[in-house]
Length: 293
Image (cartoon, rainbow, N blue to C red; front, side, top):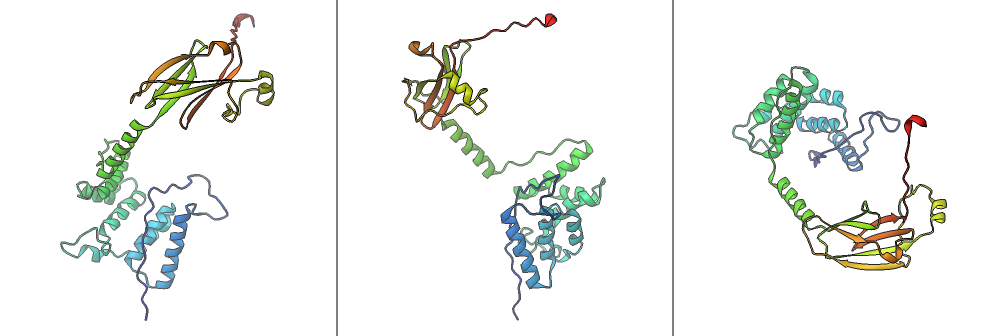
């Protein structure tokens, strides 16, 4: 007789569910497609197996929690017989065949719902794992302990920064230091363009004359944003060279004197980076006397 006793458990972290409104006709809808497929496969596995053991109930409880089905998870949790996981001396507690640490984490997590506001079991379990040598698991129990500490009004416990997390942060920092950046805005003197740049050696400024009446008729308040005119031949283009800098540097460029009296769209480009500005050679000052309307 064939015995079905294998399922590849998959963890989904983080998995965020909608807090207020359910989507669809059913109370619990799994919006994450990968998790939905995994959960359906797991249910099929349980049907084929028929006689479930503690490992199956543990997996089911965890998957129910991912759906925010806490009451169902608490009910399933009561079917787990974890005694055998504690009776093996000098065993590797992270072994998939034991699942003791997973069970302890599940016990502590559900105790936040079952024993409010004492959290007696959760406090004891978290205390046991605050110095656990596997940092990923230690941080999970620290997260639970910090939730209790926040409830008690106590100071939170610092988490351990994992080596891989630190390396990812360092890599992101290095990539950010190398990335190119450019921004453009009209300075307080409207005939100057203020350029902020980083890791660039040159940029191009293109000037496009525009018909203000047509532009106003199409988009009176520029609510559609500034259009990309790169497919149109510019009235004037100039390339500016700058010293490469790993820090943000500023430079002011005078609007071309021959175009200062024109309404224009100005595009500042460097490689794939483009910033667009609208330039109008006029200004309006309004004086409001509030007491007289």
